[in-house]
Image (spheres, rainbow, N blue to C red):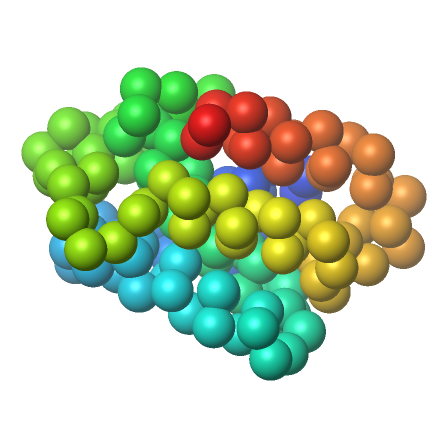
Length: 134
């Protein structure tokens, strides 16, 4: 059975994403954010894309010095070793805000949280991320 919670690291997609980042490089985060923005232009965001997108934005928030309380120590150490915010040709902060907007605006994840009776609590978590990324 998969993990499923309201926090951005409480799902299998985010756990897999974190594992990929820790064994890869910072381009995984950028590529994920770009992928989410591209999908949201033409199509509906499915839950797995939302899980990865929110986890990617959590890395950005942590790099800005505003980590989630549930980010792993291993991820924080990875962030300290990688210059995550240094991309001259890509506005990572603005793009991260857009990812959050698209997920909150309408996505499978939002629908699933509503069906589970967790919408208000989940929106609070995502809005907290939005404030930490700003």
